[in-house]
Length: 418
Length: 111
Image (cartoon, rainbow over all chains, first blue to last red; front, side, top):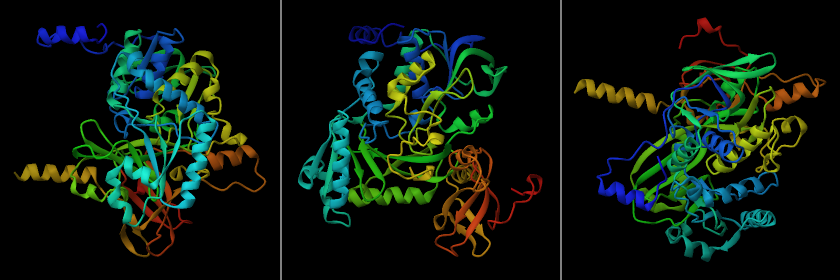
């Protein structure tokens, strides 16, 4: 298959682009692997890639019930950031930022990571103070953060000026200049291709329906394409975590909720970075093609249906119009939903499972995309060493029972509130 | 032409079906009038129950894919709490009652 490079592109252009090969193989599942990663989303593929690359475990299968890029990795709003406050979170996400910066070279695939900045708008003096505190916490953890005055915000995002005399005037903002966007499909395809080149089998249309036990241990999975055994089985299935865990009699501190996202028709550049509205829940950025990509709250009820309802649709749009009235002139192209694994404290779980041979990666709430590389990196470490890395040692399953929850919002055990 | 229209209608119905709850006091109302509560199958443990039982109650969920018993608050209506049986895969509601009611057994529910 070879590397993608300029010479390669020139040669293909001269030969009519007829000799490109598929980016990854389509192998038949073998009967045994060293490790199985259930879930071929961003996290699962990244886990397989780092298992092979860093830990030398190359007999790995990634089992995906649909196709690569069809789940949440292709359904998010592509925002990458690490503006977290708590110690358990900040170093993990900041490690992720390092991996994002090196991703294109590392994977030999252009993930189009663009650190154009994430700006949180403050609309009152007290909100501004809270953001200053968050910014200071970020700086203590070595993450760049800037607090902006109203003028600086409007200089950065002139499109917001029209909203400044409206109901929620802008007071200031918190900027993470190193944060930004990445192309989500490229992240999925890049990890898939890079993992495949290291010998990982990516098996699509292969749904795990049950587990194979041997005594107290899990030794394999029953799938729609036959039984597959492995020494280690990692679950990275986002919204379907509870469904799979229930086959093993495990109840997780997770609820599945739907999050909707939206994209408009392509338009000239109007938003420079990522902007989040502070008086409601709304975040927006502009894709490289020009479409304005935005989202808001989850629908707020348990669901496994990958589509939302109209009240939240209306809420998101009205939030958008409050900060960007000109948005009303654009046509909406698409709206879709993805199933989020909402945890009880808003933070994820990357841990050795409660059953031998099982590893858990779940509870990403609606922040899973930015965590893709760090999650895969830490989950691979956890699977390879049967022990968490320092970066994910706070993300244990038993932290709830022990009282060590990592609750950025202080919202308590109500998944719909995170 | 008729067939194409029917197909389009079916598609629209399938993708943006609103959740409408038949409130025993107010009749069928739109989802926007209600606030979601939580899983209604969880029962408060006794005060002196052990920590493990409390941990299971507070933090762990069945997170059912299928028929789910849950509370909704008719916040912009009669303000009463309702117990609703809703399919989490399709959003179809098969039963609505008061919090102390129990839905009829699985076989009797008409969906």
